[in-house]
Image (cartoon, rainbow, N blue to C red; front, top):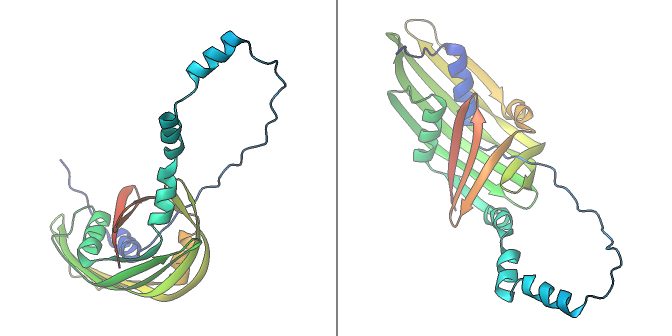
Length: 228
């Protein structure tokens, strides 16, 4: 089985993407139109008895009414202050690198606040890795420091980023391949935010744990946060 080869350009993109923390998604909802029932004749005794037999019991009505509550639970559960710990951040970067990094460390913090219309994040992290691809050593470092805020919409458990409200800070990534000179790229939070607007992810929330799942360059990326 052939081994995958990591090249500087994808690794730079991966580190920059992995270091920036939060992506939310939205879908437009649909509205129900008004319906006016047609006039009907009064039911006969037999019809009334049949209708009564078909009608749900109080317990059945209660169960039916409670069934759609899951989406509301996600919307209310995800509100508040959240933090991604270093272990979760390390796992995130490893996912983005496809598990290729033999030696990795992540220091710092990534915090997020979600209200009814806005998601705001603050990040101060440094991620480093060392690996080998086809006999060539590769090392990298990504430093992310800044904050941003997006509007968002939520449809069921799918969240979509809307307008970038504010952004300040940079994502700087440096990769060294073999004996070549280090290659560095830097993106502002505003630039990354412009790319993130309109992207979508799936939200899961239970008590003090929040997860975002999204697709990044063909890789399923799961971000896990704990309530602060």
